Length: 197
Picture 1 (cartoon, rainbow, N blue to C red):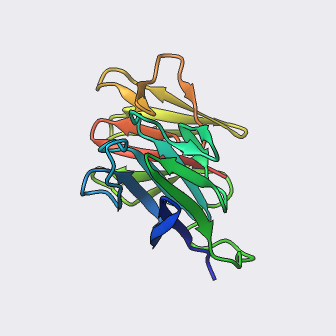
Picture 2 (tube, rainbow, N blue to C red):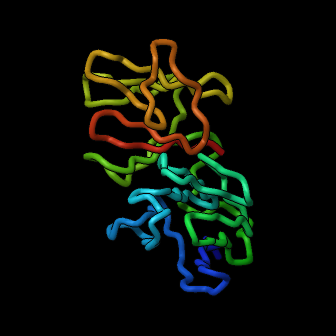
């Protein structure tokens, strides 16, 4: 049986909510459209995001005003582990997972190596396994960017003609950028997340 990540939401030491964290994107903030809405002036409208793929969950702070703290340390990006305490404004979120890790990989877990998950855009919800030495990204016949694989290292290279390619909100320069698991990529209207086991 697959484990299901969950969050226990506490305010002033009282548990106010407990919820499961779905696969893919799970957003947190003050805005009503988020998966977890936290009503507190210290919470940004778009505060943080948890991305879950297979057995792994990654938290990313969305450049919030007051920051996100995990285990008492201000954090921009973090691979979540059972028992991690996330502090956002006045709220404490305790990340947990059900017991019983499966012996084999679940179908949603990418094979060993790396993959891109399309979060928004025309092919939203699809996965691109990065098995080739070079993977071209963009519309057919016109590459916007490419990812090169050398051993265990994956580098994002941008073709700056169609428009900027962003990694974690920053433009990718001519020399390229080495990717880390959990990085968010933006190519025009398409948003992707890089995952590496």
